[in-house]
Image (cartoon, rainbow, N blue to C red; front, side):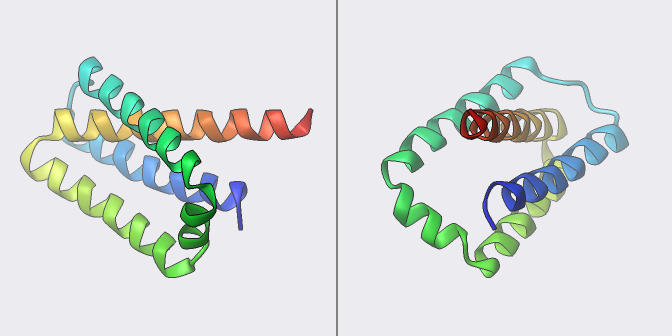
Length: 110
């Protein structure tokens, strides 16, 4: 597990958000996209403070599958109730997280 698994799960989740976004024909809300970006950065800053604990929980397969299921639940609720806001924020969140993972991989390679 690790970075590769995280990237695969985030990519699957992002695909769900993007497909739903295209399906409903929503418009991208820049403010919600940025909110998602900021939320990811904030979460990562807090998670870094508790890296060992967060990683111990995250490495459990049921936790990963539950997180993926939750993301698809959010997609469904977003489509039903607030597609522009929820899908834009979700896309911003996941794009930022994938960029963060890319930065981690690059920094480890050096």
